[in-house]
Image (cartoon, chains in turn green, purple):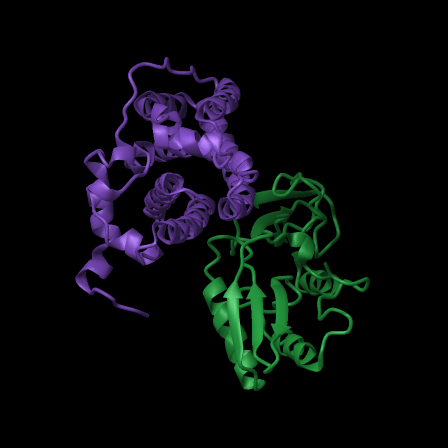
Length: 173
Length: 254
């Protein structure tokens, strides 16, 4: 889970190679929501180095069918190679990704570009109510859902009844 | 794991994978044709999730089989007789109402199945289920809401979904069919009991049908054959389109 400041990163006491790898991964942006890095998104699950400094990185997909997963793996490999690492990137599916893993910084970045960050899921993943979501432009809670499925698998489309603007909501997952 | 149990699990993973793949492909046929833009996006998003589930399940099936077949090999190099999907999901889209009825009957079963598979003693299957169940919960909410909206809508929409329900009901029995191989998996705590699954599915379906003001069709004679590779005429056309490129250009890569 993210640390107290809501950030993902190496375990305390991790060696310099692992720390540098996390830094390189923090520069890889999600291709569909380019304000978020893959570290912000909480999909970097593990980074470890063997005695020769070879890296193993585990990533997890957001949605099973997310078309961005292959691109993300490729970009992570490229970023690590550019930073001089000999790295192997693999995809793991368990435990399954949840929007609760989006870092505090990531949630702020989403809000800044007008995407409502996901409600914390508890046990209600994807069944949280659609009402009472505040408009990111005018703040009104008088909003409605237009479409359960939005411009990417992870978002739904809502609209504000007060200022009439449509906006994206990151779905609770 | 014994060889028999492994073979049974291969068959089970293949059936689930094929069912997801065929339904995912069917839904993708709506791309650019749905009655409204939001639904076009919704149906294709559901299709993406299903193809994602198929990839995980077919990859696992290939590992269990141990003959070096990966997800692509299983998806693209098998003909109709080797497919193990439920007959329900290969039925053509027809109209939007028909698609929604087919989707809801499937989703209601899939969500109950994946909820239970999360507790499977097979770690890989449990991992796939934990991933898939979150998405399927969203799907069943969507198809269920549409079924209520159409069933409890206009005379025309009611008539269309009632007709679809009558056509498709005969394909629902197969989802809960039991055979020896599956019984062994149930006994080993790897897959849910089809009897329990059917009871949960029935309760879920009946509640939505009531809201939709639709009558539950009587359980008459049920179609079957999917798990033996005996399919309706529709699957061949679907595979011909889905497999065209890898068949025409074997081993093509991006």
